[in-house]
Image 1 (spheres, one colour):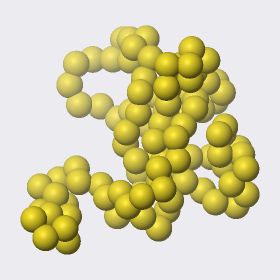
Image 2 (spheres, one colour; image 1 turned 45 degrees about the vertical axis):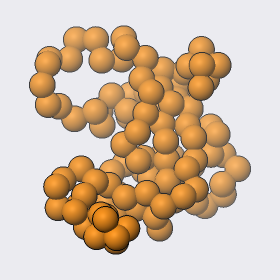
Image 3 (cartoon, one colour; image 1 turned 60 degrees about the vertical axis):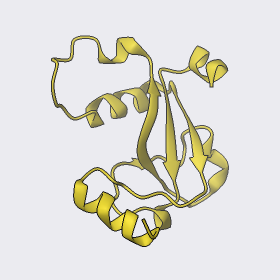
Length: 105
């Protein structure tokens, strides 16, 4: 990933739309490295590596990263990894309990 960060402001992990429980933000098909995926639109998994200066000026605390992501897309300095395995959004205790139940935990 280091060589990708030399050229980009962020690297995002994306998943297939069928493998996620909650859609967060769609990754445009025209964004590298997804240009060869045809009509497939990927979903941002909420996992990423971000250049520190992208968050400069943000107040401490909770805020939406979506406007920052969209600005980075417009700049063309975004790269990504396509995760092909099963992924589930476990952002709440209920979702985590559900996944633990599915996995037999």
